[in-house]
Image 1: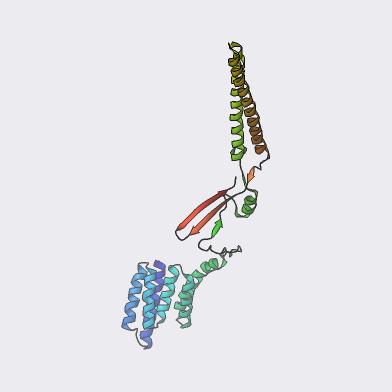
Image 2: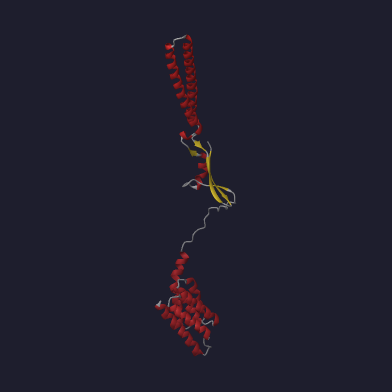
Length: 267
């Protein structure tokens, strides 16, 4: 910054002295105030504020020294794209050779930065089509967590893998079969016990009653075994034949009051 100030101050002083020597009108007082303020900000490295003051002064009195000062401030502020045009404007005013060399030196310092900016790769616009926003109340399909969007239709069509023991109907049949067979076994055991007890009867009526109860218990036992076996077998068939892939869907429901996730599953 010290080198830049060394170039800036002599150039401005030389321009002011040249104007005085040539008999041209001196810089307007109000413009000179802005120049001095700008130089003060420039010395403090407050380049944006310095540029504001130089610009204000140039609007009052379009003197070339403001152009050179703005070029220097823009360059040191890291904006060579704004500095080069100011240097060029200054050179078009046909300054003395020494002042012209200082402006050209500022342009040369800016060229590497301008070249880097021009050669920097620009981000290519995305070719992916933009999705239209969902209307209020619409149902938007949501992909499973971690799933890629391009595989969502295939996964939705295949369904979700479910274990065999999660089938409700198969579970009901299997449990019912086990309970019925257990009841049949108990009934047959009671029938056997009652049948053996008929030998203890002392009268014919007692004998017939005990034998009748034994036959009834035996019949109930056989029926329970038959029903239980059929139900249990039905449960096994259900487990074996039912598709283990059950279509499932997950949806996001949008409405004016907020949003919610709805999961649908068929059984």
